[in-house]
Amino acid sequence: MMKFVLKTLINAVAIWIAAWLVSGITLTNGSWGHQALTVILVALVFGVVNFVIKPIVKLFSFPLFVLTLGLITFVINALMLWLTSWASGRLHLDFHVDGFVSALVGSLIISVVAWAMHLVVRDED
Image (cartoon, rainbow, N blue to C red):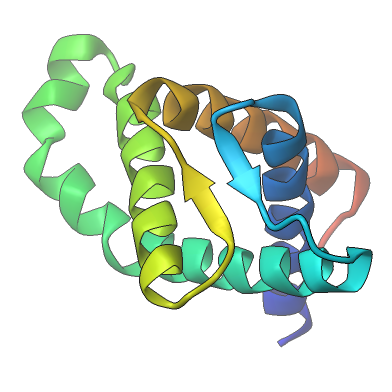
């Protein structure tokens, strides 16, 4: 359970940083507490999307993984962030990704920040 909470918080920080750096990713303009709650809920949605849908997409796009030597991963990550934006809108969360380019840049930032934070904050595994 602690591992799940830690990964969700790391994703929340990474999403917050991406929203801060990329102009096409918008987060609520409310108070700091409202932004924190929104970004944690968006991180939960992002986790569910990555847990449920991403493996299915990766399975069906396996030939593209081979053909592009794995570079299709960047496109799939961008699509997962874009899907998270759509799901967040359906859940009335104040998080939006404007287009594919913003999703691609945002997913790269989220990946790098999450990777760096996982290096700093180790699991007990």
